[in-house]
Image 1: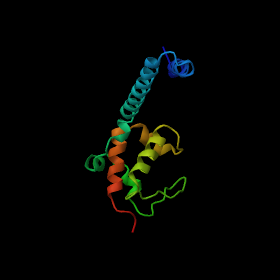
Image 2: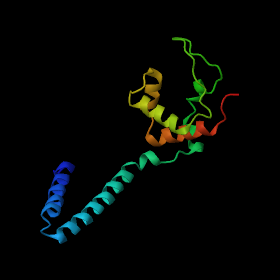
Image 3: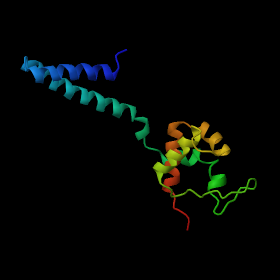
Image 4: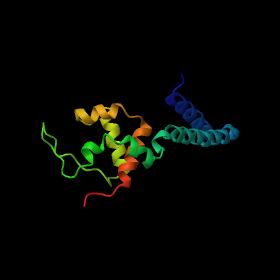
Length: 141
């Protein structure tokens, strides 16, 4: 397969030879067109790959999916029995933060056995919906 480095090197060689030697101004014009085309292709690929990340969560669907979450995160001042630690009430939390945190738990980048197991069962859309639901709630009083 041809990688980006190959195409960039080829473009640079053709572009620089047209500038340095000025032998073929038409080639120089074509290189400008190619560069513009390359930017369009790169931006299109970036937007396509970011599509799932830009998906909006549905708070109503998230309310149903977050039923098990509220058992711990819906109780003000809740502390786990063993090992003992404070469980944060996440109503009103920033939606992007919740998506990031749940995704990190699912991928094993954040350490908490229970949350990692919960995260593994969630799709990207589930995470977006749950985050939208908790973000739509009011914070702690």
